[in-house]
Image (cartoon, rainbow, N blue to C red):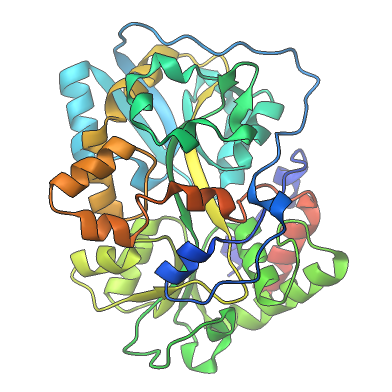
Length: 395
């Protein structure tokens, strides 16, 4: 487990950012769980990003047309191999994706290399304004990207992504975190995070290699009020819970594609995942998988693509957003990777193609649920969270 430890010094530059609210009742019902207690009204919308003393940056203007290559840090489910091929052959745009697991990993990489080596980065929710506060990204003018008109209007209006007349990220997808399990081995229908601690699951649990989010899960499991902003006592309880869980952990998983494989070959019997995991495992030739949202509540993400400040290949990255974010490609991405995306026209295409049942099952037509989730973001107590995670997994 020590190989999974996170270097404490790598995180000392990061500061505040908190999640909000509780997952909406409609999402809970869709995942087969009972709704959690309603959140306070103020918690149903995210706050504006923390103010920065940096000079205001105007939204970058997209070129009329652009070719060339660009470097992109992202997750494996943000593109399709055929999409990479078509963008290169049809538009002369070559994306060079490199993968990461945790938001903090990508932020630190961009801090280190800047726009000279990285042109575009994918990011979750309240991590995105953190990039801006660190002067790492440039706001976009969504009007420069025709496909942005295909987006659900809500996705163009997140207040925490609005800065200096621009938008901090091009909206992509969203999901609450669910627990996906194999009913062949977990025969009683679980409703709580407690299922992870069952001794019968020794060596059969998988969790995302996302330290802040794993600590948030443990916070939810132990009753923390704000999982990304826990008190000393709450953090200690979460740390102990994660320490107690270690015998059951098979692996900390870096990409959702790996989670699908592990569930499909039955190496893992339960893990944290996104909406759509059931059909993804089925499509991979795996067994029946069920998913639920724990009764104690969960966290969620909504993500997008950010353009690095002073990106060396900005025009090519803009060209990708102009051409690769079309409804046709977004619809295909959904069928491959399962979780809902923010392109409304893509939903209509899925309906026309006979996939409405699948799209509705995974809330593709319910983007408003994304605005009610406890959003992923950097914890204010960076060092304490990292220490707690490292100490817990060290045993």
